[in-house]
Length: 140
Image (tube, rainbow, N blue to C red; front, top):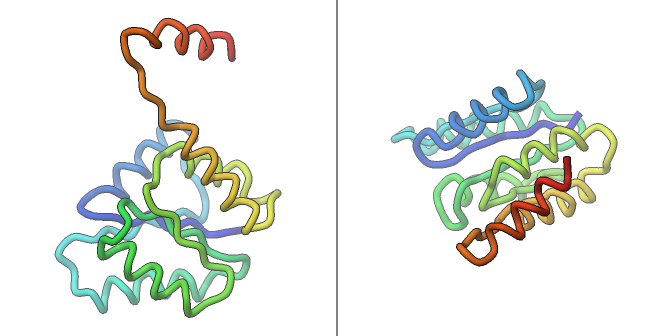
């Protein structure tokens, strides 16, 4: 099974994992690695240890492009095959990866969750809220 790492600044990973556990229950092979004033070598080693112990690949979810969690994850990702780093993470992307990671090859999974993440970003304003709400309600 593809391992999922959630990392980011402050308690980002803790909040994301808490939301996932609330929605889906406790999941296997999802590891949070918080970046809170931690020594960069210790932080990097934590992520690398997870990557080394993943036989089927690793997906690393980070909060923002260019930040320390993203930079360290991409540096580590370049050292190993079957490691993908996804930035700009939202909870929809992680949920989709949980659902599909056992039935979809890793590269296809990354493409799928990227699309899901983009589609999860919506703007609701006074003019569109009625129409979008109607469309969402019709899904049920």
